[in-house]
Image (cartoon, rainbow, N blue to C red; front, side, top):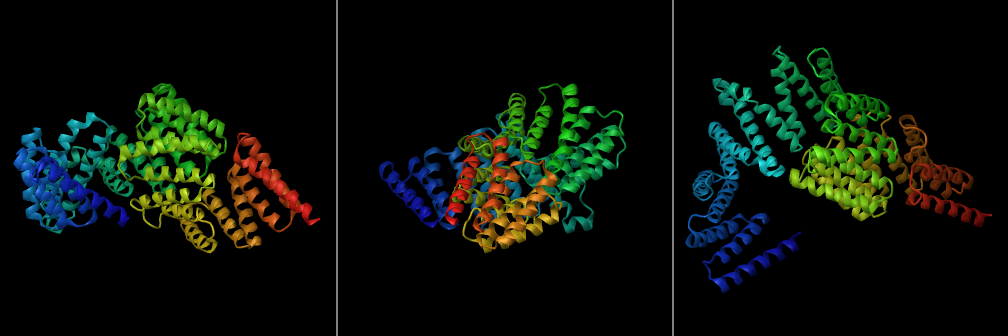
Length: 583
């Protein structure tokens, strides 16, 4: 907020005075303080003051250090500031100075500066130069990629920049008219696939789809075994991206096409076909077809273990998905057993900081939450979120999902304000990757409003909009629609419209019983809500019936110390007390 920003600015300003007083105006210490202050003004949007401070720091560094990494850093920052002001010639001059100094100091150019020049060249429609700078940045990053996952993420950013140049040049009106663009070598070298994967890893699923779709067109024109193999792989990637975007029917179509192609090719390995079945199962989970998903996973698991060995990452991924199915079906003990095995295998095969491992660990956190182990769940999910931020950067759909799960842990403990804060963080992050009419945004809006009590009319308006989105993407008996009907029932109950509340709860119950086995925890949740409404209507026998049914399910499915069991017992006590008072 403004107060905290002003406080930081005051602290940094005072530090500049202090360093100048102790060490002199042209000292390195004063220059360091000036840079820190310049960063704050830049972040605030005051580029004029930031430029003045960086210029002063540049003079001090140059006097004391000569050619140095500090001077190169300031030149790069000044170039960025000039670029933001659209002073492109001045920016390019500063970037070139920075590159010359980086070469002298480091022995090579810094990829960040090369990319900055590439972006600037693209702004000026100098496509060839832009591509060259980005490619040189990528070459350096490839050499540095042994440093770990973070350097890979920087490579993804450069690949995305290369993709921007590719599309900008290809779609440039002047080039179209002159037919002057030839990207045959670029395509042959595999750049389209690398760029598509980079967008995928950055959570930019729609952009990734664009590149994979173009790649698919190229492969389908060829009639070689390798081309057919790559076609199937690309179809599966498109299916996975469609699933991430909430387009489940489209995802299944892609995977089925891949499976058909693999089955028609005698050289296709059984493991590849099994991996396609796993992807189909992952989509079936999203479609709430849990038993079909479990069948696909269990059949695939046998093939993968036989073909690849028990410790292969594909085996671990399949185990993780089996755990996810058991979670959705309400068998939390089996879910935890399977997920723990998958986590152990993933850590030993692909490492603890890989995308798949973190997804498994997030699911373990969700199971812990359902089992009432809130502190352990919170610790697990926070650790996942921190690792995801190291892997992906500050924003990514996977981080948004984890924040949503953390919000759920808080809400389960009736910590509404903490839950709401997490849901808002998740919503703000999802807005960067999804459009307002997509299911992810609707889900976040629902989460935010249900974590805010006392606003039933506003909640119902949000729920109505969300229902419209859900029905666009989901089947009529989808679990998410059932949950939304439950939330609507809660809002109507808060408005004392008990008949409508009961009607919504009954609709939700029918969906849950259609999709899930009888005795699922969510059925007990509906029973509790119905019991609370009937209690308020003084229908004590009806309330007791629902509370006893909920208690029976909770005691079967949850640990005996779970808060839902104790709360249901309290509801039953309250029924007895109110019934006694009524008599």
